[in-house]
Length: 105
Length: 154
Image 1 (cartoon, rainbow over the protein chains, first blue to last red):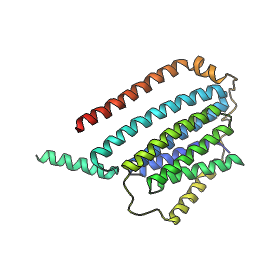
Image 2: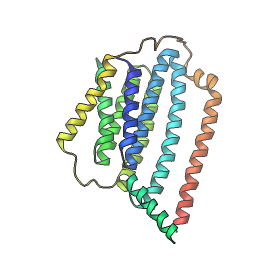
Image 3: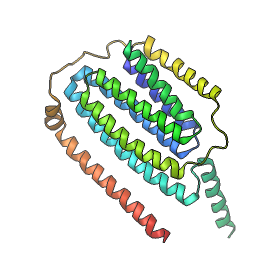
Image 4: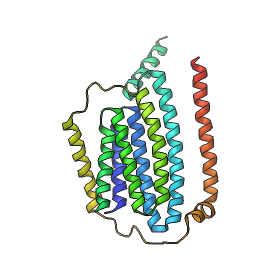
């Protein structure tokens, strides 16, 4: 059993989800999975460099992860309210239509 | 054996969180991911990490449940049991490398017995204060963006 491989698999699943999902909330979940994979690596660091130091790094990683989550959620709410959908393809289409209508005008 | 079970559960719940059609079920699967991760931390002796994982996880999930209900587009069709079974199978297969492969020399290189409090405040003290400042700035930034959006919407 190796936690480095486990966190690599988690990272791969998260990146695959980030690239293939079109829903904003699913994109957010993918980012959370990538962050979880990164923090899982800090547990391995904790066993290698001493539990105290590893956990100190881990808490810094958690705080960064929480800040990222806050920013993503704020942007997500604004975009979803502005365009009335949380589908990335539809949002891109709406932006392109708006640009085209502005150019024509 | 318990680590292997937790690894399989972790990967299966991560796959389900990403690929189930209904957002609410995805969030429930994400809760499972956080739960398994926290259990792995506890079994590794990282109790503080597990507590933080629970705290951060509960906050994230509460917000995701709310925003999932508010913002999530309703799926046109429900996920079939066959697809759910396929996702669980895919998750189980993906967890096999973590069980059977290993990277040598990953642990035990420079073990030290520094305590958590010493590590946090004496070794990483400057980082902790700077990160607190960054998070405060981020929180203020989010509040300003949301306020401007609300003001612009009126």
